[in-house]
Image (cartoon, rainbow over all chains, first blue to last red; front, side, top):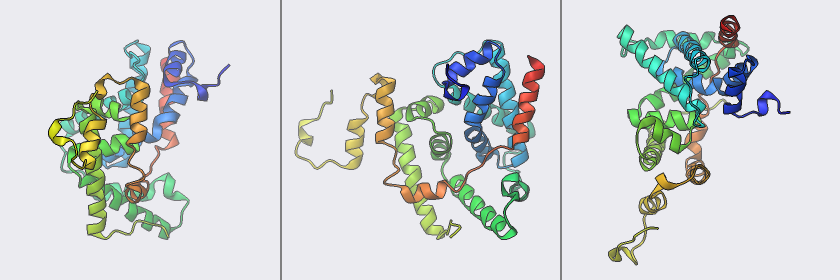
Length: 197
Length: 77
């Protein structure tokens, strides 16, 4: 008898559909960091990212309950697609694509629980590093930014990225390489020191 | 099966050219073969310095948010 943690995404979905509510918790815990980081990199606001994270999994929950999820071995990719659509919906509604305040984001990061246990100096260093890395990623062209997020932060395969972005695997691989080359150049140009040491 | 034009034989292969040859016709590969391709093209060795920077951006959603979702799950089932 396998424990939930050893089940595949598909098996956990089946467990949930068959009435085992705790399998959803396992699914969320398995993918929470990837989904949250994906959303956070798109919206740049902690509270908004949390709202969209919650809405994403509520939608996942409903789709599973209504039998609208057809597994093709890509549960995470499907969840990220839902999250992506909700982010787009949000920006459409609020018409604030270019008006997100960095100040509120930075303040949010300082107040986040993750940083709460560190001292003030560490807070400031962490906050600066976080902002620097985020800015680096934001400076990439959209197509390269997307592939870096999906590959590095979400762990999708290049095949999944190709499907997700409607391009060939060849193109996805090329974008990844260009993104990494550009990031290296940006780090060098800005002479960034991104370390706690 | 790759087709290499006669005029290319004897020419030194650039990395890009080699890459293009290697990933030619990926659509016909099985999932297992595609996983191998992912391993082959993970870029980690060549771009270790960049990955070290990317790794510094690392967040997790607050547990309260997850608990809230799970509470809604309980209510809806």
